[in-house]
Length: 261
Image (cartoon, rainbow, N blue to C red; front, side):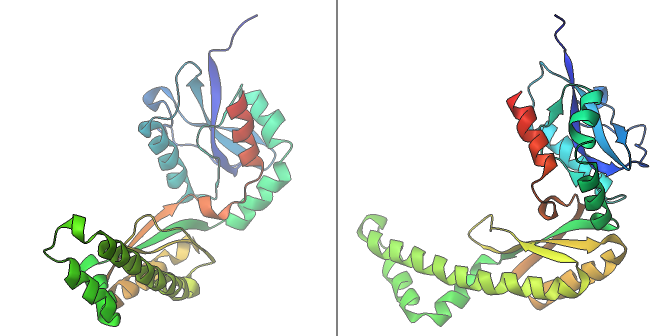
């Protein structure tokens, strides 16, 4: 029995007429040129990977994301979850592309001309705390009670203050996240609010937008940033692969099956 030493790493699904750049590289760096495996109207972006090489380094994840994000700026792509490896290129067709050809084709048609962007908004800490304190005299009283006093004798007040401030910010976050969605609705196709990454996050919203209207999206974000200047810092990331706008389907099954092999 001959044991295979390499497998085929899968990044995402693209239209079959896509050609990769000669210098495109993925997981594995210079030793991993990216090519395509075609079937019908769809194709998989792939590269060879050594099976005795553990996946999962920050460099691997970055290479995976960078390849998909760069692709999304040019052609529609259905991203595959990081870490999907099949036996060889024949198995890519037989076990993945052929059984799900029509699903992938339909998804690519829906995504044609579109990409994901992410709008993040973070409160200016001093500004939001001033807002919270101004609206709730009890919080200002608690703040005064713990100021310049040892932590061990003001533990209960500090806990109450922290909880109350957190709840007040959460209320603002809900309203401000919706404000982001409303502001971007005219220039986007769909939106997905994400969970906050930090306690002072005001919003974290993924949007699906037509790449030809990117300038309008940028202007809408700039207007939001101008309106919130001094209170909330707003950033726009993208274009990105549409991670938040692809249902868990065959591409998830591929990762699950490869993870078990």
